[in-house]
Length: 177
Image: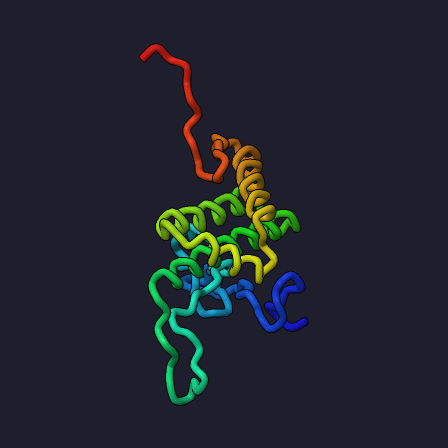
């Protein structure tokens, strides 16, 4: 396997593995192979190596002549959601292998959760189909939810409660007011 390839990814697909670059005063910054970098003097909210980019155009039959057709906003939104789920899956896998600390894994995971909240509603059937192509079924998504709860527990944070549809719910409190 070549650099950046992983056996758990479809053939021909790679993820940007971090490379160290030296910035101002020799401080290290993490840089993904796609060229994006976490600034050396600012703490990053996540590791860009886990970002999976979403193309906003469809491939054309003659890419040298046409740049491709622009995707519909709903399609980009669905694919963005899927890229976040795939990124969370990679974060959990690296945490299990000891590549990420539990704190850093939680920080990365919560970054992608925030992006999902920004995305909003998606087409559930289309998302399910896209994720299945990458080996992420409904059971794995539920497992990711449990992994997140366990990660929060390990880091001493309040553990969210999820309802039947996986959405976070507030616990009902018995109170007089």
